[in-house]
Image 1 (tube, rainbow, N blue to C red):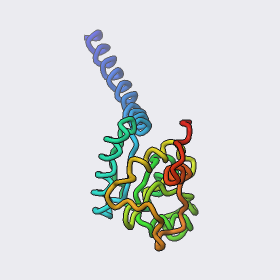
Image 2: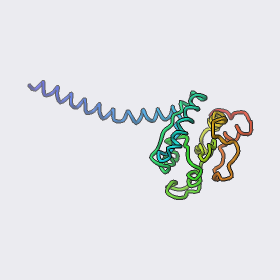
Image 3: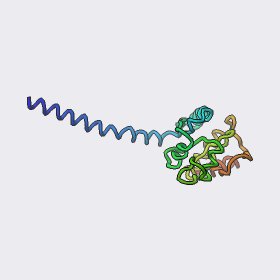
Image 4: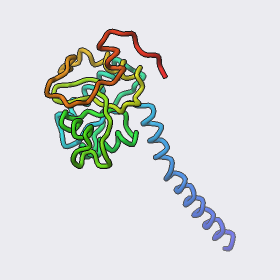
Length: 182
């Protein structure tokens, strides 16, 4: 009977310790998944942006297969900006008003202060934005891949916010060669 109890205790301890170890695995796997895939994130409060993000991700995945682009939604624009600020995501699709508010640090969208953004391309009333440290070569590739995307605008919209273009997107628009990869 004593041997039987010992086996039960060891089995329970083994199961408990393995479940604790497994509790950390999904997060680590999520970090790897995020590092391998380019997410185009938008707010779930904007259903049209979600559909547009799906089409953008499909286009990027087809034209830039190494990007393994996927669309994703955050709860709202505030969460999109916080994910971008914390480098948990790299690319966001936001309205021109949201980008303007984040750039100026206005309202609750930019909780914690202004968020420096750079535009990869404008798609109607929405901007595909990144942070300034987004690699120039990737910005160039994305701008090129989306150049003939429906709703893409090559010229600046006078109503667009004062969010500057990313240097990689500028290089593409000016017809310069792609910047070297980092």
